[in-house]
Length: 503
Image (cartoon, rainbow, N blue to C red; front, side):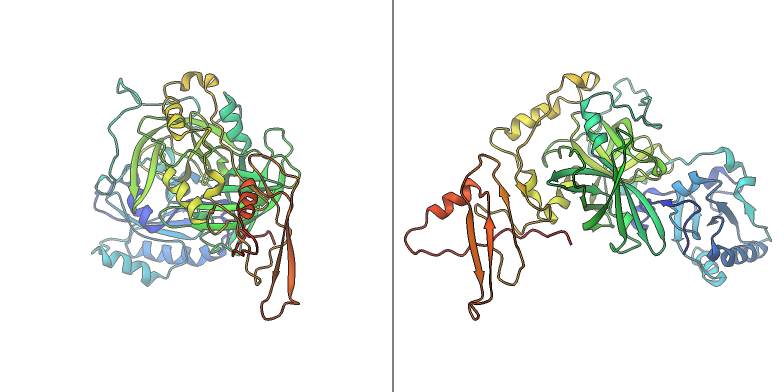
């Protein structure tokens, strides 16, 4: 399967979410009755498999089946609306509902089967219609959520007067941040490129932690669906000063289904890269909250869009934020931030019949962090009580008009040598088993430094000659206190937190 003209940008198109949100706007494009189905064939120039499907579509048209051919190069808005990431893609739509959808070549009999399944029989011949010849050329995709499958969490409105919400940057972003929170989020944004056998995909990511030349990037999961997580990842950053840098990335974990979220580790070496704050897990996010997003429209440099939370909804059990303003291709994976600049969500998709974007919620962000056993990187210290942080964050929306006066909440974090997950947070570190080749592990104390070091010898009980030495050059006070509490020849079984090394 070939790519769509230029390197493609990727959107979420799982059938479950598609059937929840993606509904056709074809009823405004045809004079037929609402009950008449339409088979859409998405094609592109240079698509070899599309040639075969083109003949199939032409044949169905002569048999009287309603078909429409869409060149995604001419109509990228249609590609956005139908989550087209590959050509050919075929979609059967009727009465504002996507009944069938496949991103692959299909035979004529398979497509006739689609029509038979919904009880449709062609009554008269009809030729294949180019989409550019229809009234659709003047239309834009619009969205309408399926209310029977969406539960709203609040009735609070962002505009108390009832007027429609809008901002100057809601649809066309800016690369000029208005305050330090937007500047930090913009500087922490990376453009991701994933190469697999089907082509190149673009997405956006947000740096949530960085240490000693390695950084953690949170992004969407669907960008890794086609490759099954095996695609070659490249991250690009440094857009603020115009001196962009490309570095390799490694996928730590992803969920391409309902949660649609992923974590990538990148090696930024000596290049400076800021990280954003991740909002605390129990921070209340409500309808009407002022927020902003950062993303790479169509794979371009990242921009900032100011908007607000419109609804809170669950899709297939996963909490999502519906925000004002539909995102475009390439913003997938980009961060959603509250007025204080804390990460609260990740871009998943654009709705179709209403002007909205769909973002993974804060609970999903923390779900991904916990799933990869990295929550120790985001734990608060006693000096920054959760209650006080919640109070400050809850006032952010009211102070959004003058966010320069807000005080950023800083948290202290442990700084392990590697960003890969450890098995579990413990009071004392744990020594890896002899079969695990952990060497030269260095811990840095978040409280105070020490001129002491800890030397650990790991050896086989059956073969004492098979041994190696692990040196902890800067042990934490907790570890020293733990070891200092041993009496005489007392021995304790210690296990070092196992960090996944970059290879």
